[in-house]
Structure formats: structure tokens, C-alpha cells
Image (cartoon, rainbow, N blue to C red; front, side, top):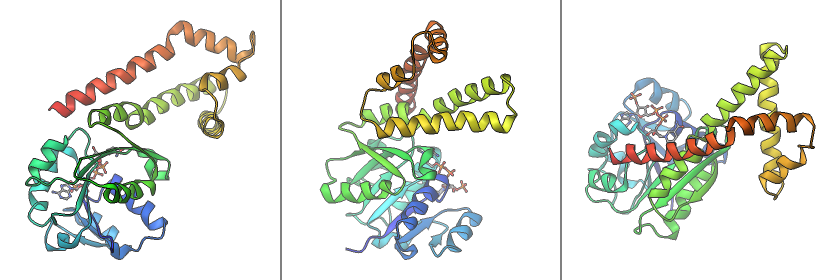
Length: 268
Ligand SMILES: NC(=O)c1ccc[n+]([C@@H]2O[C@H](COP(=O)([O-])OP(=O)(O)OC[C@H]3O[C@@H](n4cnc5c(N)ncnc54)[C@H](OP(=O)(O)O)[C@@H]3O)[C@@H](O)[C@H]2O)c1
């Protein structure tokens, strides 16, 4: 069956996914983008994608419909989509904090829905997307959605919708935590005498290198840490201070706080 993917909202995240799919060789003719903002439509149309201002008959043969608006306008967007959504289309929502029950309600009882929580590294093909599908989605639907997010990085399927809040707390917000740590490393480098551009380069490089190493070796992260921490050495000195300051504990508590906040936001 020929795939037709409709994006409701052609903003940052939708474009990251579209870029990933085009980069994998998908044809622009397989997409429809619905976005009320003319410059967004013009930029996408210049790349050969069909774009419309509002959901209409163009949706009638969509196999996948990706809801990619901001959460606060999603209800209104669904109101437009529901009139044209094919009953057998799979709907994927990337809207943070909008529960499946609301989505199904807003879409007139539509059952085949997947909730997705991507993160911003999707823009460079290194995203992690958490996914949860309703019972109405079979293996074929799951595969189709998995392929969508495979274009922008890794995927993790969860067994419950609640775990989407956990994904949000770990990888959705995770890049923010990492930027926080990177900015601190950059500040330390600047204080040691490096010019701003070099301080930034050193901080980014430490993370890029450590992340690549961690991804390449199937050993515990604590083991990797121990390997670069000889007793009495420089790393040991710094980590001893960080332990005393409770850095790791604060990160763990931060993850719990984020999950709690995600639950609060989902509850409305
Ligand atoms: N960016 C992330 O890292 C990230 C991560 C996980 C999840 N998400 C989720 O992804 C969603 C999109 O985020 P984003 O950063 O891509 O936002 P964005 O860049 O603001 O994109 C949203 C787009 O939807 C358009 N839109 C508004 N109302 C519409 C309607 N009724 N029909 C069709 N399109 C409409 C907006 O147009 P206007 O500009 O004219 O309003 C805008 O172009 C959000 O729900 C967010 O929670 C984002």
C-alpha cells in the first residue's frame, strides 16, 4: 500500500521528521502538510511538498496522520481533522501532555492512535522517541510509526501510557540537563583561561566523545567512570567534590521532579 503521511502542523518537530524521511529517500509526493502559517507552507512547498492552510479533502487518503501542533491548539486542530480522517488511518500525536483519551474524543472516537515523545536531537538524526500505541494498533501500524521515527533516531516502545511521562522526564527533558552540565563545563574551561569559542568546543567535545564511547561499549556507565578515575588523580579529585556536593543525587531527583510535572501537565 502506498503511504501518505499528513502532518498537522509544519513546525520544528514536523520538519525534523520530514527532513529525516526525505533524507532516507522518501518522495515529497508522499506528504501533505497542514499549517496555517503561509511562510511555513511556502518553505515546504519549495521542497516539493503539498501544503494546505487547513485540514480538508487532501486528508482523505492519508495512511498516517501526525499531530504536530502545540498542545494548546491541538483540540481545535483535531476538530478540523476529524471530518476528513480516514477510519483506518493511524494517528500519531507528538503533543506533550495530551492524553490518548482526549485525542480519541477530539477525533470523534478514532481508535488507532500512537502517542510519541520525541526530543530535539531528532533535528540531527540522534533523537530518542518514546512510543505508546492503543490496542487498536496492530503490528503493521506499529511498524509504520516505528519507521517514521527511525528517520530521526532511536525508538523505545512503552507498555503503558503513563511511561510516556517517564520518557519525557528522561529523554524529552534530558538534552536540557546535558546542556546544563555542558554549560558548567564550558564555564570552568573559561575560568581556566580558554577563549569562549575554545571553552565551548572543549565542553561539547567532552560530551560528544564520552557519549560515543558509552554507546560503543556494552559495560556499565559506572565502570566507564571508574576506568578514567584513578585514585588520587585529577578526575578523582573533581568527582569527590561533585559527590560531596550531591550532583548525581540532584540529577536523579530532577528526573523524578520532571516526571511528576509531566503527570501534572497531562492531568491538565
Ligand atoms: N520541539 C521539541 O523538542 C518537542 C519534543 C517533544 C514533543 N514536542 C511536541 O511537538 C509539538 C510541536 O512542537 P514544535 O516545537 O514543532 O512546535 P512549532 O514549531 O510551534 O510547530 C507547530 C506548528 O503547528 C502549526 N499550527 C497551529 N495551529 C494549527 C492548526 N490548527 N492546524 C495545523 N497546524 C497548526 C503552527 O503554526 P503557527 O506558528 O502559525 O501557530 C506551527 O507551524 C508540540 O506539541 C510539542 O509538545 C516537541
